[in-house]
Length: 182
Image (tube, rainbow, N blue to C red; front, side, top):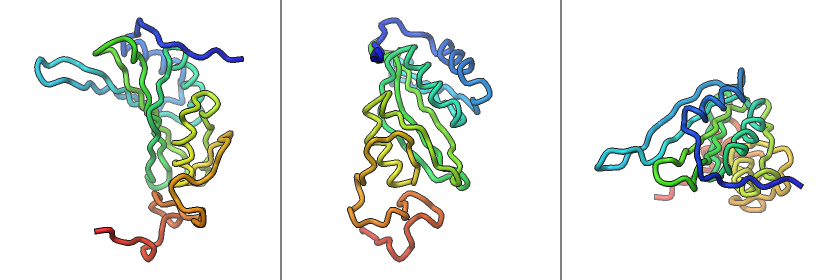
């Protein structure tokens, strides 16, 4: 039986988290950027967003490491067709219990080559990811290894699953099948 991560009251500073990510990912780290979100007046940091661009190979290792730091609170997945790759973004946060100004948003951004759209499912580690993984599978064509339920969420049962609505290449919808709603 695996222990469920617990929230921590003491949070690491953003530099410590970034150092931990660098150490964990090594060559799998592509780029990392910290963005501060300020309130109106007085100008103070309400929270920070850390964007981590990484190779697919380091993904599970990093997720496990982040779960050791604090309970990794999953928000949602997003994705985009970026030409030769589909970019998957996993939006999460750390230190939710540490109080105002300490929460750290973490977005893991992973480019997945279109000729190998296979990615590990997080549903066994973070059950709340299943819904988003099903959406990314349905809309962008990413196959999540270990995803227990691959039923369609948004598209009708008789949908041709070779057509991926959010793709901009030949697997996307044809111009004839798109209708204007306004």
